[in-house]
Length: 449
Image (cartoon, rainbow, N blue to C red; front, side, top):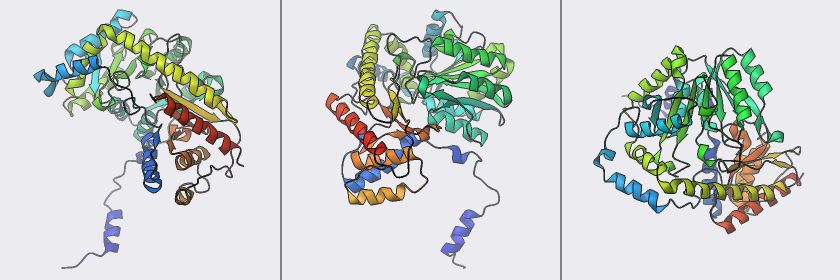
């Protein structure tokens, strides 16, 4: 019997009957978690703990879920139904509860059947884009949350189509650019909005959303609105949910409990569909998403069952107000610290728990951070070759010098050099330490040429 050599193995691994790689495979990037691999390697080499400022997990950063929410979860676990399948659309009583919350506002009317649950919002986002016709494109913001941009681009097998958020105008959308791109690209069939925004923390006022809705109406588009941070708009901001503003435009609103309860490990998100009765093609598209979900049977039952009890609890509103006030304080303080740095633009967040910093000084390949550990310096020299995006170089060297993990803005479909940091740290002293270290590193980097 002929023994297969290693060379033959390599040959047969690379030569197949047909190319089996999806044309959009190279678009599947997620820098938010991708940078953690580098951070773990730096921890292995240097032996120092990492300050994780890359992922929006409130629990990981020290937030304690209130006992009254834990009691609701524990009590629900005792209900034997929480261990079984639920309907494909989701637990009916929960969908009825959520539909009534929308209907009470009176701007659009939906039923329980207009709501569909998923195993986390990432699952919902994946279905939204993969069930589109191959040529149909959804234009999204830049910078943009990576799950949206990657899923949309992978579906199309092409680069994302974007409208820019203007960092010198509080990260407001460039509406003129949006209109022109929609007007001259007939493949654009939808507009994606993230409000409050990730990664910038911006909150778009109703006047801006109304203009985006008007563009969608004029060109017969649908809207995808990621509103996962809807209940984390800081008090006093001019904000309305998209359900108050879309009128007759077909819309998908994406929501979840990962940031609110907070329970990111529950992987529980849902879509609310508005005006699917207005466009037969849009209704058929939504039906295809439901049909795809049927192949998975259903989403996790337990977290769905707790939603009416948590959201309906008299303690929920006051607790949410305290959380918003906490993040608003963090946003102000982080803006004070980083806004004093040389060569950056920092817009104070108005919602969610992220802040994005843009380098407005011309960056150079000669800019560097000092890394005292020689092994780490040598390791990062290989990870920062000539031509690497300079915000990525800063993020990598920040890991090596200060063990702080942030996400380069270039990882968010963005041509502006900068980085995103979270505002989640519950320990005041650690928060001050981390942001002071980032600020000193920014100053060192832009002054090092």
